[in-house]
Length: 322
Image (cartoon, rainbow, N blue to C red; front, side, top):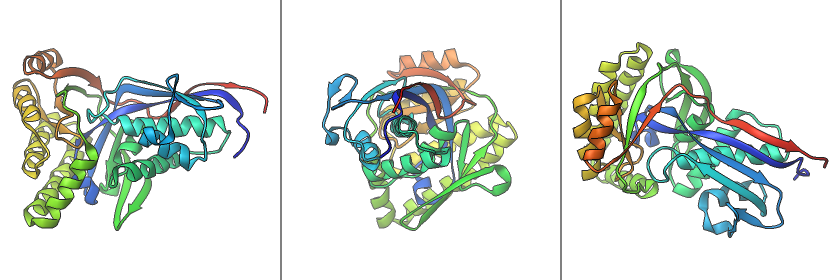
């Protein structure tokens, strides 16, 4: 590897949520992800040992960090991570970690790279850790704003293509309106790998699951069209339909259903986001304070977020002689 050209380098990535299409996207169906105004920041520096937030760690103690460092032949470094995202909440914390860590490493070593490189390598890291994943999260954390996967070419700007195990995902940047969402965190950790595996087994054993995945793909496509027209009322209805299909697929839970149902009275629509089984739900609304109150009353933790935010960015770097 080249000599380190920076003593410290900091990069940050936005969190994200899946607006529509989670789980189905693993099987090549369309999905939409939106970057949010909450970020994860990673600072990396030269060190004789491997430390994370000031404490020594072993390479196998953090699977995502280990995967990124190993892929970049880096055994020692001082890493500091600061996050506004709740791990396991469905807000893209692993995608934001992988993309910001990769960007800081490549920048520190003076390597040439572009956003496609970051999104692609971060996807490889997530796939390795989770066993099965789509490039949606890492693409959204890298490029920001709105990302559509496998949408018609006339609805977005083509960014890159990923392929794994017979599945292909074409990634597009799409134009989205500025929107306000309330995220309701259940307090129950969402375990992506186990839920992805649960859907895989269900799909292999039951054709009904295959039909559900197909229908999620269909209404996601309708959602992309609604976004292009800034039709929030139709988008909200599609979000709620998406939630019902995910619930039938077996990836919702009592806590999520409770927050979704309670939020609908003051929202265009609501649904779980991410892998499910806990984590978070989202509500598209013009009455964020009322939705926050309802989520609090029903045992959730609310967070108001906005969309149309930038992706990966370099925050600071201190050049030193080689």
